Picture 1 (tube, helix red, strand yellow):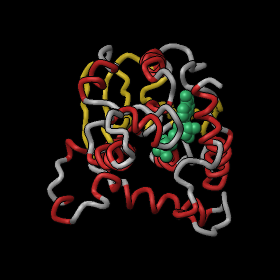
Picture 2 (picture 1 turned 30 degrees about the vertical axis):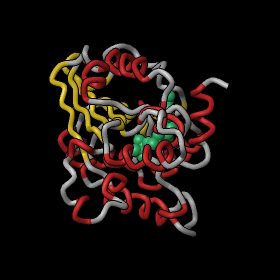
Picture 3 (picture 1 turned 135 degrees about the vertical axis):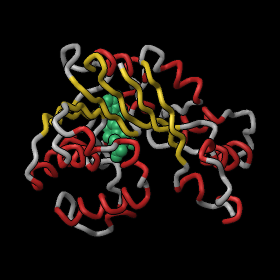
Picture 4 (picture 1 turned 45 degrees about the horizontal axis):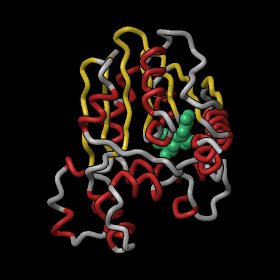
Length: 253
Ligand SMILES: C[S@@+](CC[C@H](N)C(=O)[O-])C[C@H]1O[C@@H](n2cnc3c(N)ncnc32)[C@H](O)[C@@H]1O
């Protein structure tokens, strides 16, 4: 099986961000279900607003790569952005299409592997992708597709996983050190233990290299709940953002 087929099988188990710990017994694909997902997401990841800055882009044309359950996609639509979205899975497409119909918004949604985007060159003002590209077999191919479909001066906004993070350190202690395999690297542990198989994680230098054909590259490290959980409170309070699991990215074509 090719890696992206395995990735797809994993994410078909349920649209990302709609696990039982979040939605409990709520009926799937109802307004209550979506609202619970939305409330939880922005309680836990409030920094999404400061990275995406949805309302600043009213009237622009957006492509979202990896819409998942469509929570951020809805914020784009609510902000008056013309939306187009893709995802590898039917689960994500169904969740996002149903959500848009419930809330009365439109988006051109397609199921596909973002390593090949079926859009002409220079189609979009913004491409947004939160926590997606690192799951693919060839992330650098997605980044080059994103650049191709952006208009000159268009902006990529997204998030990818940071390897030198508190979360990855804890994962390494658990699976490599305590698992009797201290030779495993941080990258190995993320590859095998985080979400779908083959998940990648990056240093700042690696991300600058991946986005080298863009200009105005900004990397914004963010501490997440996964970084701060399980440490004694006095330690988690002093963890620097640079040790965050999420790296926000803005880059201009
Ligand atoms: C961690 S979820 C993130 C979803 C959403 N952006 C969010 O933040 O909730 C990863 C998503 O990326 C999608 N995905 C993974 N690889 C992909 C690829 N090669 N092309 C398109 N979508 C992909 C998965 O199907 C899944 O919906």
